[in-house]
Image (cartoon, rainbow, N blue to C red; front, side, top):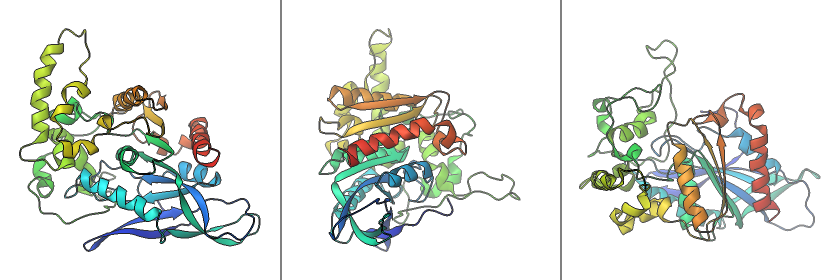
Amino acid sequence: MPQNLPPHTTLTYKTIGDHTASLDVFPPIIRAITGNITPHYVPALVFFHGGGLTVGTRKSWFAHWLHRRTTESGITFISVDYQLMPPGTGHDVVSDIRDLFTFIGGDNATFKAKVENTGDEIICKIDINAIAVAGPSAGGLGAYLAAGIVQPKPKALLSLYGMGGDFLTPYYLEQKHEVFVPGREILDPNDFKEFLYPFSLPTLTGSELEYHPNDHPTPGLPANPRMRLGRLYLQLGNYLDYYTGDHSPSLSEILRIKRREVSEDYRDGTTALRSEDWGAPLIPSGHRVLFPQFNVTPDWPEMFLVHGTDDYLVYLSESQNLKSIAEAAGVKVTLKTVEGKGHTFDLHPEAEVEFNDLFDEIKDFLKRKLVHP
């Protein structure tokens, strides 16, 4: 977990039984203000953390480079928690997103910020008509889900190697018996019995990243089993069962069988096998909200997608697929591919120098959509 996070205000946006879901509000730099209007309304970037939907908190994999550029541009940075699977599902994440945006637009979502030219503290609220959504990996999926359900629509969407651009691929559906992520071992399901269906687990809105100490036989490797859960479900080919909650019958199995059948019709390679053609009819109507590729409409926000060409945890093809779908719907999309880079490349210690131009381009995109629309 990152240390020494910038000053922020923590607010609870939802209570789920004995658990709470919270957000951290990092106030923007306000250069000047005239008059005595309170509260002062400010734009915001809502940031969903990564972790495969199985692990992490609003403080995990904190994007300092994005926080700094956001707040220096006069945009509030908001990092949020959401329910993890299992026992949660994508439907719980959708519910959390709805409640999050209801809270942000309500009377209790206030915080203080300093005015740079006077040093005064003022009460601020979020301008719900000037919100962007963003996230890395599973956080990118959170941003896609928000774009599909939130009203008013976000003004901008930033996805960093986001998942959810195409869930109906062999990567999600096929069982794997050999290493499929370079440098990552094949996992023994017996080591994760408590997380396999049928399970009995309490609601969870955050799970900290934990690593083995230097005196452990495997120093530096994940000590929290949830850090490997997403990869385990991908290995077992049943990630979508946990995501949708459809274990019996298994939605993954239904889709897997159908994909193998239709693949025979495309063996000559003259026509592409598009999941939108064969898979959409198999997704129950109640689950369609969870599949961004089936929910892009012309009123989606302008999107800025970033993806490394050597990402083996979330394939570049997911961003490429969603870009094609969005553009066909009339949505403006920018996709920046980063040659030779993999997952979380933006969090590398040298990334601030190596990708300064890209990071500044993202800053300019957000400013254009939220500060100078």
